[in-house]
Each structure stands twice: as C-alpha cells, then as structure tokens.
Image (tube, rainbow, N blue to C red; front, side):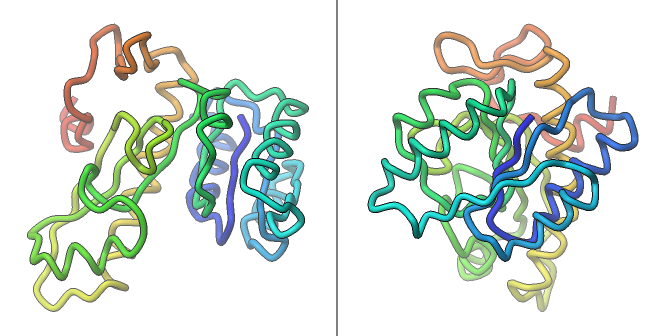
Length: 214
C-alpha cells in the first residue's frame, strides 16, 4: 500500500496503528507528500516507512505532476493507493491507472458537500447530522462510489472546529476498516463501477452502526 498526504496525516496514523497492531494485512511501501513540511512524513518516518516528497510547485501543469506521481507509484508497485488528506485534484488519466485500487476519505456524508469546508457547509444548512465517507476514487471529485460511512450528530452550539474533531474521530475508525476489506478481498469494484462487499453489490454505503451491530 502507498499513502498520499499533504498535511498532518492523522488518518495515516490510524492506518499505521492498525498495521502495527496486526489488524491490517498490508505492507506500507511508502508515503508520498506534495508538501515537504507535511507532519505526516514525520509520522511515517517514525514508523520506519519510506517517505517521498514530490512538490507540485516543480511542475508546469497538473498533467505533468500526475505523470511524475504515477511513475513514482509504479516504482513502489502498490496494490492499493490510499489518499489521506492529499489536497490535489487528480487528472482522469491518473485515476484510470488505479481504477478499483484507490480509496479516499471525505469529511461529509457524500453525496452531500463534495469539495472543501464541509463542516461549515453542514452547519450553515442546519443539518442534524454530519459525518465521513470512504469511497473509491473516480474522475469525478469526491464522486466515486461510496463504501462506508460514519455519522455524527450535530450538537447545539457546534462550530466547525468542534464538529470537525468529532468527525475526524470517526474517520480514524472507518478508514482502516475499509482498507482491511479491500486488502483481504472482501471489497472490490466490479466492471460496472459498483462497489461489491462480500459478493453483494452495494446499493448504498455501509453504515458504521451496521458494522458494529454485527
């Protein structure tokens, strides 16, 4: 597995913790960041995982950057690529090369609120609940097939910061779980672009409460 990051890497840490505890049957081959100052690189180095910095500032176009990123990943030869706070919009050509092998986690209950500022948008809309979604990555920004969601209530007096912190706690629970499903062959993307879990196409994302109930 290779992990792409841009920042603090708390979801990366959740994956590292699962790997070190023997809960994730993966080999972490590398962590790649487009920012040299990303704290997630320190988390990876502390865990003995090779790190790579590929700055987008060194490239004249998004396509040129993605070609270099694809070449770097080809060297790592991951069976799975995980986006953990990677703040880059990927080109369709790049995404197509990892079809069915790339996951992302997004801090909203997709299809609600793709893009940025999800917590503020949920509060402004007066939503009673918010959450996070793990999804396969496709050419559409935050639009790939959702696999697993966790929901959190929006509490009276919530601001974006407090809501984000509670959502992040749930992200750390659902991302390792979805990675384990994919790594153990329980989860895949079929020819029609549908996520399949335990042999059954998912018409809607699995909810964390349903997982906990079984």
